[in-house]
Image: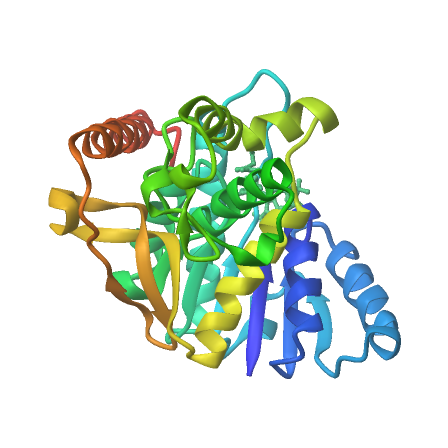
Length: 314
Ligand SMILES: NC(=O)C1=CN([C@@H]2O[C@H](COP(=O)(O)OP(=O)(O)OC[C@H]3O[C@@H](n4cnc5c(N)ncnc54)[C@H](O)[C@@H]3O)[C@@H](O)[C@H]2O)C=CC1
Ligand SMILES: O=C([O-])CC(=O)C(=O)O
């Protein structure tokens, strides 16, 4: 089995390492336009394998022929944001990159499943979907696993309990309008509202929504450890076909009365990709938040169409 990671930068290299350390596939191939970088990072990781104890072999390349017959492809190619920027500011540049890398990848792997990481996430997933020609269930975006991980980490810190006992659901686009759902958050099976008052929950939700930006402000570029681990967890669900229930950007075709784009929803993830979109009951407040987030994703898609019409996105 082979996993391809496109973009061997901060997130891509971390995904590749996390996948290799799970020791579940024979090969991980990293692709980048910077010749030498994917090869050097792959060699460095191979040299760490006797210490970590994994047999997955990593290679780096600039040639898509080396990615042939991959089971899973994680797309991380593209620019990260800098302080003062929103993810949406990356739209034009990253759309061209994501379209081009997707087309080159699918030529050699017509049967793979694609996980998009590049931002702005929900629209880049749509770009990869259109460029791939794949059915919608074999293209998805990674955001919810990362956003719920941040949310769970903040809750664990506040309560002084283990992160392992926190389960959470979050929906919507990967941006400031994302919708963490405290009603669907449990700690050891006990709902979050029984642990924390409304103000504290509000503060944790607010920090989660700004979680990406908090790191950009600290480092001058965006996060990679948690994003890399999150994309590797999704890859594992596909490779092992274990039916994980996770939030991810999936193509909605009437679910939640939304249609024709990718947005964060709970899914069952396995070898066939998005095997099911789970429709949970939302109260009026939660529904309004999801609608606002969906409108934002739709606005971004309209912006993409405008850029295509103006020739800025080819
Ligand atoms: N979905 C999410 O939750 C997250 C998304 N991101 C996004 O992931 C993307 C990557 O972030 P980083 O790894 O930090 O950036 P980075 O700059 O460290 O790495 C990006 C890599 O893409 C490569 N690249 C650019 N154009 C390419 C092309 N045409 N073909 C192949 N490789 C190409 C670059 O050479 C570079 O090595 C950004 O768009 C960022 O916003 C980052 C964190 C979380
Ligand atoms: O904030 C960013 O630009 C990168 C990202 O999507 C995240 O870390 O959530």
